Structure formats: C-alpha cells, structure tokens
Length: 464
Image (cartoon, rainbow, N blue to C red; front, side, top):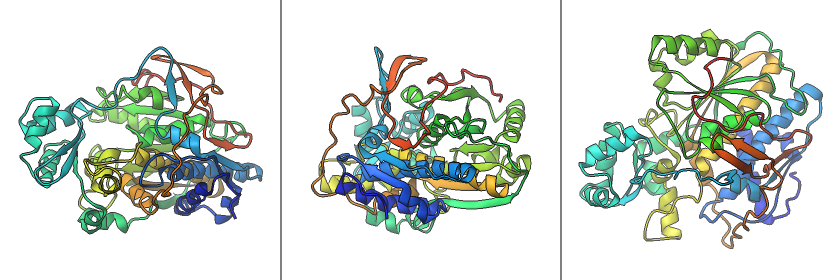
C-alpha cells in the first residue's frame, strides 16, 4: 500500500503511477516506497497535477531501483504535487531578463467554417507552409479571415501536405472512431523490447550522482525529449544534445539545456553522418524525437543502430503513435490536445466560447519523465543482463492515459509559488542570472542538480 499523502486528492495520482510503472515493467512492490504530498491542483477538467506527480515519481522510482541494483537498498521516493505542477510549466525564473514568447505571432486556434483548428507556426518552415496554403499575410486578422473559408478537416490536410503543422479540434468520441485514434488505443503506453546481450557495462553508479559517466546522445527538441535528458543530466549523465545547423528554440532553451552540452550536425551530409555514427558507437543511451521515418531516411534504421552499438539503450518519441496512418505525422503537445479531444472537453465543460486546452504542456512533460524513467530502468536491466533495449513513447498515448481521470469537482487551485525558488542556487545561464524552483522530487541521499548552466544551442563540439 502506498504511503498516505497529505491530501486526499493526491491518491488519484497513484492510479496514474501504477499505470506508468506497470508500462515500464517495474515490480509492483516498488510502489510502496512512494509518497505524493501537498495540496492544490492545476485548474483543468483533467487531473493534470496527478499526472505530473505520477510521471515524476516514476522517474524517481526508476532511479531508486538503479541504486537498489547496485547497493541493495531501495531509497524512499517523495514528490511534491504542488512543485511538480510548477515544473510542468517552467522551472526557471530569470533575474533581470525575460525569455522570448513561447508562441509565434500567428500560432493559435482559429474558427473554420465548421469548427476549430489550431495552427502551429513556431518554426519558420511551418509558418511558411500555413501561410502558403491560406494565401494571406502574416497577421492574426488576415489568417482568421482565410481560415473561416475552409472546413477544419480540409485545412488540416492541406497544411500537413504542404509540410506544416495543424490540428482540427475533435471530440474524444470522434478521436475514438478516427483511424489514428483506434490505432493509438491498441498501443501500449510504452512499447518495450530487449535486445540480445552485449558486453557488460562498467558504470560506477555512485550514490549521489548515479548516472555519472553514462553517455546520453540527445536528438530531441521541444519539449518532451529535452525534459527527459534534463532529468538524466540532473543525476550526472553526460548529455550531448545534437541539433540541425539552423535550428533554434529561444523560448525554451534556457529552461531545457541545463546540464547539457549542445552541438550541431547536418545528418544530411556525408561528414555529419560519419560523426553521428562515431558518436552513436561510443554512447550508452540514444534519446530521439524525430518523426518515425527520419533516422531511417538518413541510413540509421533500428537494425543499423543496433549493429553500430549492440548494447545501445534506444528510447524514442513521436507525436501521434507508432502505428496507424499518422505514425509519421508532425505534431506537438498543443496539436495532440486538439486532435484527441482534450481541448474540446475543456471547451464543453469550462469555456464554451473557444477550445480550452490544458493549462500546461502536460503531455510533453509527462512523456519526458516517462522517457527518463525508461532510460533508467533500461540501465538497471543492462547491469543485470548486459542487454540493451528499445522503448517507444508517444504524446497521443500519454493523452489516452490522462483522459482516464477527470479532476475533482471541488478543485483547490495552487497557491502562488512564493519562495520555492529561494532554496535553489543562482544559475548564470548564457542569457543572464536565474533561479530554478526547488526540485519536486526527493530520492533520499541523491539530489537533483546540474553540473553545467543552461547554454546556447550549438555552443559545444559534436564529440564526447
């Protein structure tokens, strides 16, 4: 039985935790070591705070299990639900500077002739694709006027075909009967497969920095994958993030690059592929969030990755699931919320005037912590058997987990974060001084901290 929480609401988080830990292949007895504490909930139709606490707790349990494998003791795990909620928004508090807006000027929800559609235009090429289809100028009024002349489904299809990102708002019932919704409903929360045994690793697993010396090659971008690798770096992993030559994410780089070295490679070039092959050969963990066919097109399909590195722990992510007609579709958290019925349910129950998504990018963050947990559980398995593994996650499947639970009717809104940043040390990021909120996770004797401040993308060489 789980240890009692300070709040009756926190008990709902244990249901999510059981689902996540079960999907990770963890032993049920480990759940006895977990405590979810504190009151308050993010304002939402869905139990977002419970999902936040549960996903972070799963990563903490995986860490405690790794220490148990090495030292024969299972440390207690505690998650503060209130702090977990804040971390699902942002952990960074700039001092004397301000991060850019998270959204492009024309990104957002628009009324089509028969419903709503969301345009995701943060990346320049996605913005160009949307404006090309709509044939209008780049201002909200012009875009709104053009969108109104389309049906939502026709516009979604046209923008996707043009190489852009958009999502028609569907209800949960419509998603359940959609071919992709049906496909996702048949997928596990996390797809996992063990590889053949390889040479035994020589990881030290020191108690206070258990991931020290473990190399993590990070091919992820906004937001889930970077959350996963930020967590791994926080416990000592050597994380090398690789981005394309011209990619930037100014709104979240300071939030998500902490603890990492960030380099650039052009995987479309012969030299870029040569360097990547060398990096892959010498890594312990590959975390990637490209579309399902992206690495395949560069000559690095799963079988080839395994030939290059037989003991590789390979954890990957996509937006809409790994089967079905949309398995290679571009997507982001806000789009998946529109597609899967989350925004529609919020609209019907909270604000009938427009789509009402989650108050935070919870699908991204929860999936990120699940990916981190998958990496750490795979490290434990490799220590025991020598075998690498493959794990796959998707935002759409995380959405299916979230919608299983509605939030309590009498919800307690979170109190202001007040001084929760004061216990964390100052961090001199590449953009200026900042504070990080107090960590929501406590694994006894193993603090979450980073050896490097947040830095610019492309600021390090692509080498170990």
